[in-house]
Image (cartoon, rainbow over all chains, first blue to last red; front, side, top):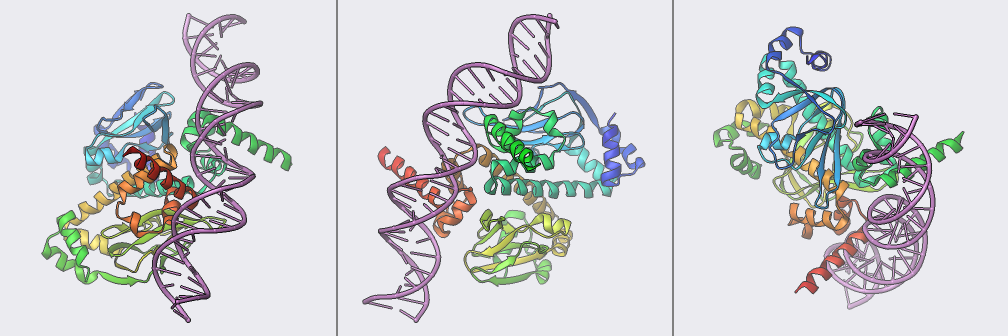
Length: 197
Length: 197
DNA sequence: CTCGTTTCTTATCATACATCAATGTAATAC
DNA sequence: GTATTACATTGATGTATGATAAGAAACGAG
């Protein structure tokens, strides 16, 4: 139970076994069925989810019903609507499971509680925030400056294993293009690499 | 000197006059000429800039020399490359002044120092981080889902006064379109609102 | 295994936006 | 006051991506 989270905290944050022991009673774990929603738009987000196993998606739906994928969360990633948690306001996003997923659920209290037990945990939390901003900024930069093809290549670099795990229409939604366009981009790339040999 | 920053901290963060007095000796203020760079790509960002008066821009330049504007920073806004500061790594961005600008420069030490003097300051800093993420996420959402026209309308809403202060080619660069396209978008909008009367 | 569903690809046509070039306009310098 | 420079608009044309539709392939439930 929460063993990947334990390993993660040890390796990435430097949280000791003893510290983790004192935290773990406050942890909630849960299995999310494929397709099951764990955050709906207009609902206040109450948890940060750590993915033990499986795959979640964080997305919005626009006025005409189209989904726009903001973030994937595979193993060892965190996902939440930070704005909604922090400001206690209704979210504009959805989170659901692309595959059956095991998550550890961290509420606001847990994060403060764990930070008091472990300064390393607190630091790591700060790190995650900064890192999050860095990734978002990077994404914006790609969206305003790069072609669909460049963005697809950047996606592969960021999430190499996801290419095989998620349907292409979701990748397209992440890139801000249609599945048909992605199909064309892929065809072009295949052609390029093939003729290069 | 740094008087807008003082007012800002009092009103937005709840920092008392006494607390501010103890901070202010560590503050650096500076005047940035129009066009002057205060952060260059490949350079590690050392400060967060608070704009007392004037207007800064935060942008990148791609392989073919095109500028992509990530953020405007008018009066009472903060700007910095958080990733570069936090991770002590070279920035991929530039910051320069669109107008002659007065800034207060906050270094890493200042932020910790001020946070120890004032818990309110520390809270406000956390608020700024969360808010930053919220804004970036919002922007991504617009970029992957909305048309140039919708993005322009959102821009006007977010920075109502900037419309008049910045050249259109910069707005275009913020929106991820060419100046020519923006000109056409504006023409279309003017037509719509005119014929509606 | 088989049928139905979902996903992916392909083709055609439509549209938004880019590019390039010319012209217009306004601010600034000389 | 004219010249220069920066910025904005317009038009012609090109290109990437969107929309729609249809078929092929993969997948999943029975």
